[in-house]
Every structure is written in structure tokens, then in C-alpha cells.
Length: 80
Image (cartoon, rainbow, N blue to C red; front, side, top):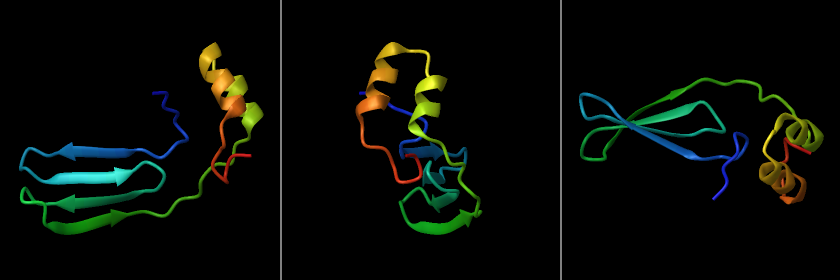
């Protein structure tokens, strides 16, 4: 499955003290859970997302397969 920097994906990290940190990469919101899965807190920081268009994505990509996919897929609202 192809993955792009602009598509949301879930990230998870386990800390040395067994806390679980999760987020979706489309916003700066990190949720923290204890080792039992109980919610502890959240870390949030608002930021402006950079706008980009399809042509910029295609020109940035150097792999033919990815370039072809970018030209055909539905893009998020911020990318048009």
C-alpha cells in the first residue's frame, strides 16, 4: 500500500515508563495513555497547514508510480 506525507496516518509510541503516545499526523494533538490504556492527558498545539496543489505534489515526487497515483487519487480538501 502506498503512503504519502499528506495522507493522515496514525502514529503510536511506547515510552520507557510504559506510557502510550498516539496521534494522527494531520494535526498536532498527542494523546497520552497509561500502560492499561487509560487516558491521561493530551498535548495540543494549533498550527497553520501549508497549502499545496496537485501539480506541486507531482513535481516533488521522483518515483513514477507515485506520480501516476497522485494524478489519479482524490486529494484532501487542503490539496487541490
